[in-house]
Image (cartoon, rainbow, N blue to C red; front, side, top):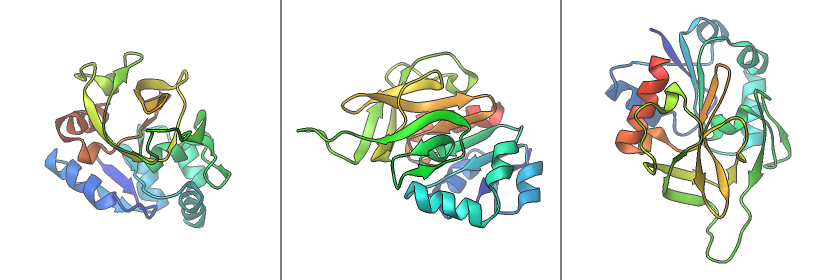
Length: 196
C-alpha cells in the first residue's frame, strides 16, 4: 500500500510522518502530481493559515488534482479546513470538497482562542473512520477556526459551541485535531484511515 503526504509546506509534516512510521507505514513526502494520483491513500497535513496553504497548493499545481482524486484522502488540521468550501481566514476560497464554511471561533469571556489542548470527541454518525472510538475519548487540538456541524460531521467537539472534529464526504475525510499528538486515540484513527 502506498501512502503519500502532500508536501504543501505544513509544519506538522514531520510529526505526522513519524506517527505513521510508528504504525509501520513509511509515507512518502511529495508534491509530485503523478505520485499523488497513483497513491493508495493521500494525506494533506497542514499547520498555518488558509490563504498561504491554498496559495501553496495553487503554486504546486495541485488544486485540480486534489479535487479529482478517487482514493481515500485525509486532511489533518489546516488540511481538513482546506478541503472545505471557504474560510473566513483571509476570505479564502478552498478546495470545495466538503460543502462547509470555516469560521473563526467567537471570543467570549472565559473562552480562549485559539482552542488549544485536549478535548472530548462525540460521535455523530457511524463510520469506519471512527471504529473503536469511545464516546468522550479525547484528542489534542490547536486552532482558531473551525468547521460547523453539518451532514459532513462524523464526530464533534465543543469550544463555546459544537464544531466538527472529524468529517467525511465521499472519499474525502478530515480531522481537525492533531492525530499525531493525540496518543492512542490519534493512532487508532490514523490506523482506521489506513484500513479504509
